[in-house]
Length: 483
Image 1 (cartoon, rainbow, N blue to C red):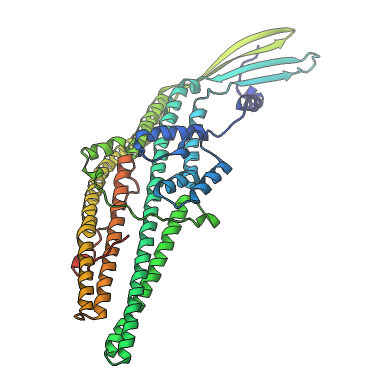
Image 2: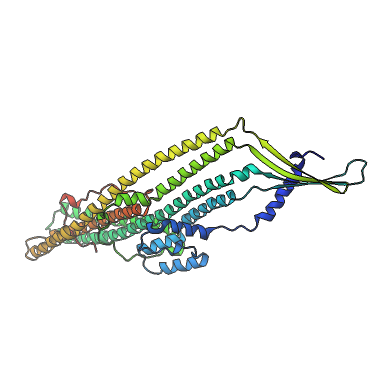
């Protein structure tokens, strides 16, 4: 009876591995729908209940169906919710994030598979003999089989972390899309106001020209009105440029190009509301639902499991065994073998040090992120209340005051107590106050979107711009209706 040797079965084992790949590999498909369903499940109550998310169902439309839905949405003037829906359907970065979750899913599937047995076949013909000897053996890696549950546990923890990260990406896309949409609304309103200011400046300059012709206006005043017209014209060009930039930023989030970018927006920025910021327990809610913290928890669990796996590998001998048979003289001789590799030198100390360090690093990041979430929540909450208060002050106090000043100026003008320039400047003050209202509303909606984002579970990417110091606050301007 011949002694069992792995080297003896080396070539047959490679052939068996190839055969096993064909037999066990089967047909592989991308688990996109299942991953999407898991992400939607992770979002759960974190998602704003009033926002439909048809793109995040397991039966999400594909290809031409997506194009049809997107074109139908684009055929109507966009709303914020419609823009988010288009982004969820059409944004390629989100699809990439979904497929990255598929990588983690594939790792779980692979880690769940038992090791492949090695099958060897040997046929020999001894010299001087007319008979052919046949040998058949089966060898199995027992260590990999014993460690399979732990390796699968690591893969599952890593996928849970990736699932939280992907869900966070969905929230991030919705947040960015809303911000971009609000920016388009504000820039469109500002462009209309700058055009109104330009027409007012042109009227003032035209009057100045006529007065200068009859000698009732100084050359200095005429030059001043001319410079005001050119400044207003430049402001229109800048506002138009800002609107085009805002549209392109939104196109990126919507994943649109070509003819699809000719969408329209009719709606104005909504009135301010601080109802959400006045609710109690917002900090605790933000911590509880945070997907950033869920991702870090998943990574910490994966680090713990990798440490446990390394500990087991450091002490577990490498085990493999098998059975074999050899046919000689028309009869089979059977045997068994067991190989043990003792880990005398490699006790996985390096891997354990690395995983423990990774665990402690993640723990520190977890605590830092929790602190940052609380601070951002308080900042966003205060900003929502502050901007709502300021916007309502402009709408309810400053704008009526400037309108009243304009009405009084008209009366004085009719009574020939004031000149036409006083009347047109009063109109300018109304326009400037309206512009202040639009800017304050935009700041308010950005802050409210940030607060909603934090309460939905995502902190990463939330930014609040520095508080704007309005020129109207200095007391020089009256106002008009931004609408």
